[in-house]
Length: 127
Image (cartoon, rainbow, N blue to C red):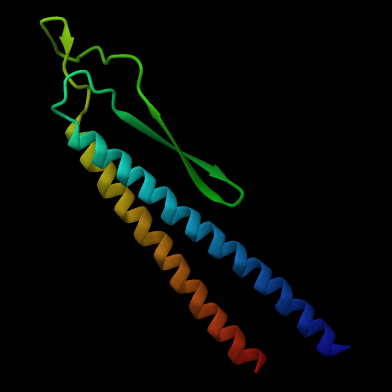
């Protein structure tokens, strides 16, 4: 009876660890998508009429998901020259987003490392 209980607890623990992995991998992907969107916006900052990408992070049960859309409406402070609108990219804001995505990436990797350590300790206990 005790062996069945330990086995059951280990299965539950393994299942929750799998969920942690899924959340961490989702976090890594979300950080990558946000980083790529900001990098593209910075690369096109001097392109006339470029509509910047907007990355919106949404929390889900399996981890963060990022939805990327092009902005439609011009910003009120966007410059216009000879009826051709200048780019609406705010480079400073995009750089902040890149730094934030870097920290999100690091946090997700740390979560994977912590999960790996916990799995090792669980195996030591069960062995």
